Length: 441
Ligand code: 5CA
Image (cartoon, rainbow, N blue to C red; front, side, top):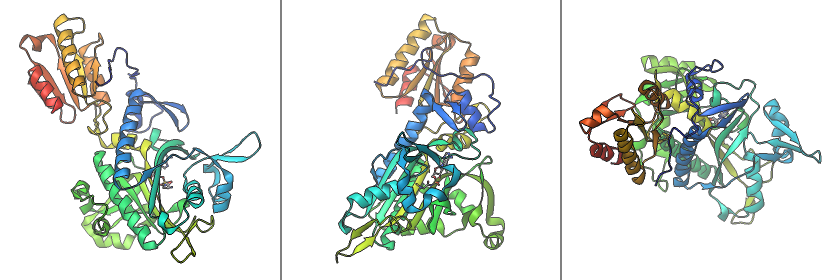
């Protein structure tokens, strides 16, 4: 049985006024729909409904990592400065890194990413070429003291990231790991209801020479991006996800046409595209890097090869902005009335609206429907409050559940209830049995 969720008792602090600190739509909607509350600049508490969405996104990201053969572990948020001194990034990372001293005056930091930490784990525990290939990942909070935290959870200071790290002994094998994660990302974003385009990207402070950002196009995006218009039509879920097979053809199919972020863009190639060029704003939801031995060499992370000689590990890292995705999905999926969740990440599948709380017939029918749907494993939020119909509809549209099941005394006299599909606005009058059938099919 799915958990009991009645609006009369659920903690859903919906705001009537539009908060004026929010500059973009997803941030306004997240505040209005009671999903998050700002704790301090760029740092948010996740309220029950926001957390539900975050967890659903996290679960899809995890499933696709596991499917690709990556193994989950969990590294701490607080790291020792020593590891970063070994890699040479402690000073290079600059003021974005939150530096902390413990009671013994030891230098610590709140991790902005985990290349050093995972390299340290691997060098300590993996000894032989037989210990690779491996892809390890975790889903953990990061801290970056961004100069301009903004747009709510989209550019936070504390944010949830999925970061994976691959270990191989040849550059060729490391590329295979890169292709695997590339395909896992296509699948992940498609399942989240997003069209994310892989674009050639700059490697920035992570380093390396091969990198793609996964970008969803949105007017409010922070990056300027350029791509061939064919990307708008490509369908990631039509791909075979046979991770044991050769994934280079899939990678080639997705990268042979031009797509680049601002840092990597090439005006000559763009001019040659003519009318086929799309210039747009985009939101970076994922970023993957191949950087070879950049960390393994200075940190002495080697395994012994078949001939007994040490081989420095070939590595890559692969990030997804899990908390950023909550805002990004809203940027991609909304209308004037509010959020329109893709079913895969919706906090509840169905909102049950009782148009006349206190009326024996409507109350009775609502309880019956609520019980049947929950018994069938459907996540339902029941609006059992004694409120005006108009305000109930506005709340349902705002929070964006895929289906609204509306029960009122008039319809019930005819033995009918209404199902509204949030995405299309389409309403159907059905018998209660037909409605339950539709929503449990
Ligand atoms: N170590 C590498 C890959 S694991 C890394 O840190 N890559 S990253 O810097 O590109 O970050 C990975 C993803 O985290 C980005 O694609 C983005 O979606 C998300 N992200 C980065 N900074 C923030 C931020 N300030 N707020 C929210 N999400 C962020």
